[in-house]
Length: 110
Image: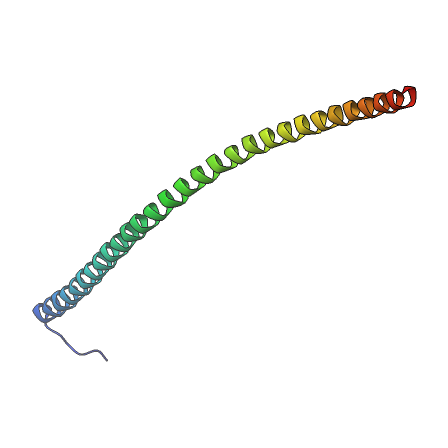
């Protein structure tokens, strides 16, 4: 059978247990708060580090896009120049052929 415990002893025991529970909860919430602050600090540090890297990557991407546009533009200029030189070469060959034929006819008449 149960032991007889005077009422004030039960109240004291309940108060002691309640105090221990409160202390345990308080310590747990302090640890959670410290862990939360640590996580927030870590998160902020990671954001700062990644923000700098992302800015650098964005800058490089923009530079590469500029270089791409320049290369495309220069490639078009080169294509136009090659086309012009090919046309000029064809015209020069046609002129030489006409000159050669005229010289041949001139020699035969002489």
